[in-house]
Image (tube, rainbow, N blue to C red):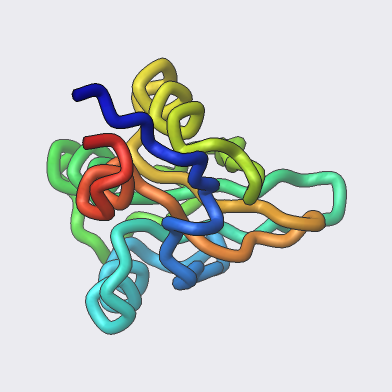
Length: 133
């Protein structure tokens, strides 16, 4: 029997934990925040109104610190972040979220509603919540 899943939005499956940090923070400071807050990524704040947000995750620390043979104290987030951040609308169907992630190669993104980031959604959220299986 083929059971059709009901529509679910990014807002329904997201984690409500969004951590915004300054791009001048060091990689060490960022990892300390991620450990304390138990998050997999950090959103980098805009420097000025016309700027855009950035994002860092574990892969960025590996590529920008470990593989570059640098210490976490000498690398600032603005040096290793991905910018602009790709965000998803709160009401986006999780099937389209999954498609966006696969097509862009990202694993998580901030969820945006009324111009504000209200949470984070990841590929693992979609699977672990049993929304696509």
